[in-house]
Length: 98
Image (cartoon, rainbow, N blue to C red):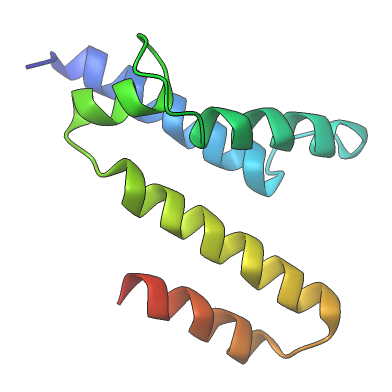
């Protein structure tokens, strides 16, 4: 079992990668590059130290559930850009998680 500081570090790694996917705290001109790198990290099946799968194993988190949230968020963003209302887009996320 990891210690509290190690757990905090691993949670911060996932949090930063999620922020990179959604573009939070990323310079506008870097969003596509940084977001793409983060998505590749999330969807890589490697189990090497500090890979997404490895981090989830250390935290006893479901990599599949986090990936499902990311897929739902991407669909929501695509729906928003297509002009469909926010309520329909959010409903898609709720079907994945609730």
